[in-house]
Image 1 (cartoon, rainbow, N blue to C red):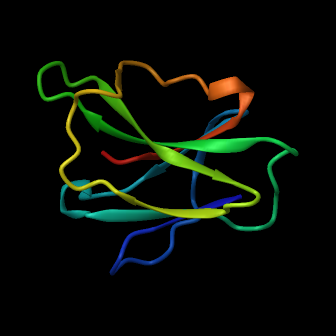
Image 2 (image 1 turned 180 degrees about the vertical axis):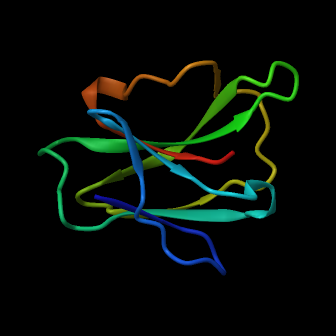
Image 3 (image 1 turned 90 degrees about the vertical axis):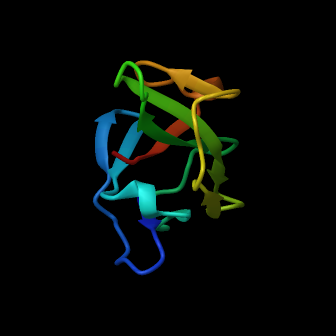
Length: 114
């Protein structure tokens, strides 16, 4: 359903489904990654009018718990996007703890990098 690409690495299509509408990619050595591309494979479209939020997750330096940063979204009309993740830190727009709920019932896709 989804793919993830980091420059210099092979395409990943091994997203782990953690809920009926949530998928996670684990990308090793995320500290050295500047940009990530998230895309739909074209095999399963979103329902009409829906899309998927893309989040970046990293461990909180103090608590060690997950911090979720919204990167953007993909849709049937915009099936891929490049996101800059270098230098992301906890701060405005970050969600600490758990897994964020999808916005307005959209399918939720995360690049979980840990």
